[in-house]
Image (cartoon, rainbow, N blue to C red; front, side, top):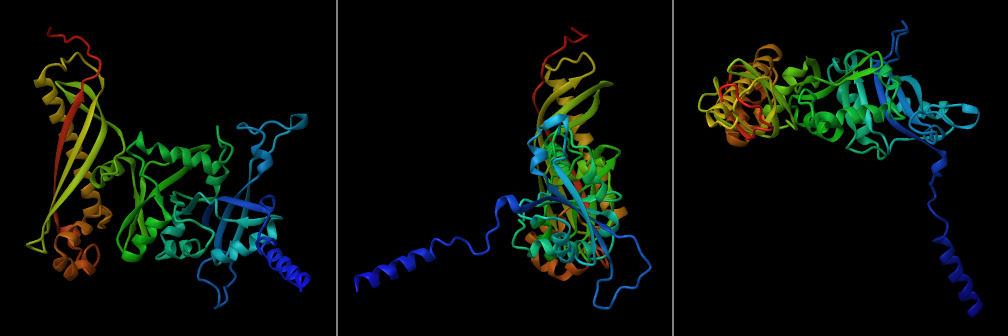
Length: 400
């Protein structure tokens, strides 16, 4: 009897020692870190009714571990040989899930999306109504992918961006990520947008912006943004770096940057260290809703092209006034672009109206930036309030 109990015990414990039934050794995984989606070239072949309306071309960037071990320059190994730390595979299919399945035919390692960092979508894809949501749908459903994946829109083709020379990084995707993180130094760069936050905008059907990326030979330019209409999540155009800077001021996403202005005909550079914005709404007349945007900023004199006495309170007051006018000018230009040219509320003002006066919002939300477009007929006023914390190093005033 005791021998029988021993056999049962060993059998039970052995069941817990078998490990995961579906495990894959790390050496056998193909780590995908970046994906670029373009429209495939037309072949003239008519797609079956069961297939999609468009055929997509996906560029998948895999990590090559042996290339990473050669150092940042990619040089090393025996005999002075070098190997790239990445490999780009191009797959065409009507669906992203179909591309994922075809990858298994092209690589000896199991494709793995858990370390995916960025998805770059070409403007040609983004300009198709609802295509952005359709492309991202696979990644939102896939259990391997995370909601923190960064999404960007390429000016031109997306695939070639993953083929740039990554200096000093080993991988093009990591090189791009490093540039995106510089938004705290350059307000012309839109802060990163992750797939989770874009998913929320797609569900709410609210207009939004996504960072723009462009390849210029072996350089990457990420100033500016792509604007999407919430009604059909279709890209309607790009905004440049100046308009993006004004947008960041309105939304409170201004992480840091400089503003140039003139005081007593001398160029002064104001460096913003902290910025916040607030919005108040008056919705008594739905035909002319009034928004008050207040922008507060603190900073210092970053550079001065003249001998001004910054210890003089009157001079500092002139600097603050000049910077306030410059901010109001930039923000007003951004508002004009969205109200008159693009006619979409990617500024997020509809959200303030919804929270302030929900009854009014319910009546007009279908026509907020579509149909009658109450957003375009709204009045938006801007007020800037600036503080110079420190004048920095002082050059002796010419008047002293």
